[in-house]
Length: 456
Image (cartoon, rainbow, N blue to C red):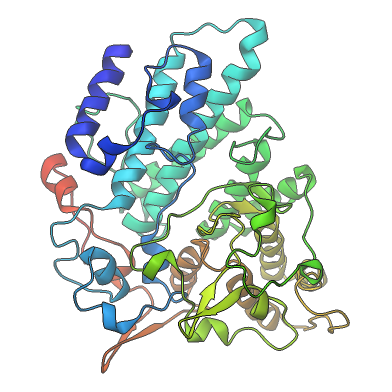
C-alpha cells in the first residue's frame, strides 16, 4: 500500500504545477500508517487535498453571476471566460480543468484511504474511528463523482444506460486505464458508495466538515430531486429533518452591518442550518474573489424580503453577494436545512399535497421576511411550484444547486429556463437542453486516457 501511495503521489507531482509543490508540509503530507493518519486525509479542508471543496463551472455558466464585460476579451483562464460566454469550440484552449483535476484528486485520496484500511484489523476500541474514516472516504468519493457528473455528463434519464458516464476509478493505482462508464452505472456507483457510507458513519458528526448519516440522507434527497424521483427525495428529506439537530435561523435577528462582507462570519463552520460544510473556492472570473449578482437575480427580492439587504453589499457600484453560510467569504456549497425544507416543499407540491407544501414554504419564508408579512397562499400546483422554484433561487444562490436545477427543469420542460447574457453589443441566448449544458472533457484527459469526448 505504501509503495502504491508513493507512486500515486509521484504521478500527482509530475502532473501539477509549481503551486502544488509550494504548499507547506502538514500532517496530511506524511505517509499514512494509522487510522488517525487516514482520518487526517479526510479532514483536510484547506490543504492540497481539499476534501470539502466543490466544482465552480456551473456557477460561472449559470444565471446567478454577473461579470464585468470589460475584463472578458483577454481574461484568463480562458476556459472560465468561455464557460461564462458559452463558447462552443476550442473550449479549454489547452488549459487544465480544475474541476476535473480536483475531483479526481479527491477520488484518488478516497481510494488510497479505502485501500489502506484493508490492511487494518481494528480493535474494538478503534472500531468507531475506523468506521468514521472509511465511511467518510465512501461519502467524499460519491460526492466527487456526483459533482463531476453535473458538469461532464448529461442529465439522468430513462436512456441513462446508453449515455456517457464517468471513468469510475475504484483503486488507488492511477496507472490503470479506465474508460468511461455509462450514466446509469455512474449513478449506481454513487448510490452504492452512499449506502456503504451510511452504514458506517455516526448519526451526528463531531464537526460540521465531517459527513454523517444525516449528511448522507441530505445528499440522497438532493440526488433524487435532481433525478426527478420525488417520492424518494421526499423520504430522504423527511429522514434528514427528523435526524438533524439544528434549526432555521431567523434573519430578523441578524445584525446587518453595512461594512461586513461576510454576513455569517460569527458562526464560522457552525451555522445552525449547516448539515455538512463544503465550499467553492471563488472562480478567478469573480474579480478579487467577489461574486457579483446578476440583475435578474436581484429583481427576485421584494421590499419585505430581508435577504435583499442582508445578502448583498455595494462594491464598485455592483451588488456583491455576502450571504454565504461558509463564514469565511467563499461560497457555501454543502448541505443545509433550508435546502431540505425547500426539497420537501417541492415534493409535496408535485404530489398535489398543497397544504403540506405551503406549510414548508411558509415556515422558511417567515424566517426570511419582515414580521407581519402575509404567508404565501395559492390553491394550484402550478402556482405553488413557481413560488417554490423562485424561493430556491432566492435562498440557495451561489451554492451550485441552481446549475442542477436548470438542467433538471429543462429536461422536464414544464418549467424551462432560458439563459441570456450580454457580451458587448451581443446577446447570448442559451435555450433549454442545448448540448453546451454538458461541458467537454479536458483535452489532456481525452488524449492521455483515450476517453470519448462529449459532443459540444
